[in-house]
Image (tube, rainbow, N blue to C red; front, side, top):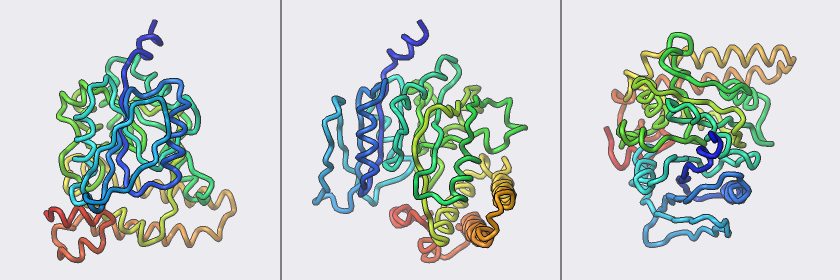
Length: 317
């Protein structure tokens, strides 16, 4: 009876897209194989020029697909997804990024299972490294996305700290009624719209489920400067929403990752990778610390440091 109820839940999938590569089309191909399919796929395509729109070659999925064009200057991690959510009347809102590929046909089915608990308001998937990921990236994925599922509530704040609010729109779902009741994603944010939503849900008495059996292949090979820029934006987000992030020990969680990764490399006797870890961690830390004081820095320098430069050009604050 419970499985029938879950299967009857309607779900719309929302995917922001910008200059997609082959991973996006692999993602679409895997959606066709899912045991539980979306009612609609809403593609939010960011375009550089609204007069010239790159055509997306959407295969026949036997699923209704709609494409909405977003001017690049108007893209925002929170606002664009908020717009996508406003287009849906489904029971469940699902978000993915264009480079997250389902590892099997059970992704959506597994993401819905935790909704057996009426207080679960969001679920998110495990992220597995792709074939190009190095040993450090593979360990980072394992650290952030372990093989054991868990359901988090306000009771876990003392134990988990910032991890209590961890949720990733790389692949996540939300109860639409709860999402709307709590105001939805913030209109403007450079980063972390998912964790800000999760924070709100947790503090309103709801639960967030990490579903390790729901798996997507998603990892990045970033240069040192890309790590710097990404963590600069992370610091900006933490400053702008200081009540959420700076009071929950987010920096100590980063330190724990570095220490655990170092221990892992030593245990594996991969000593030659340690200098790269130190350099990588240094660029991350410098970017993050500068992001925390972005409001004291010159505008040109802020734009130079940021990975999401359009955010600043459309509205510097």
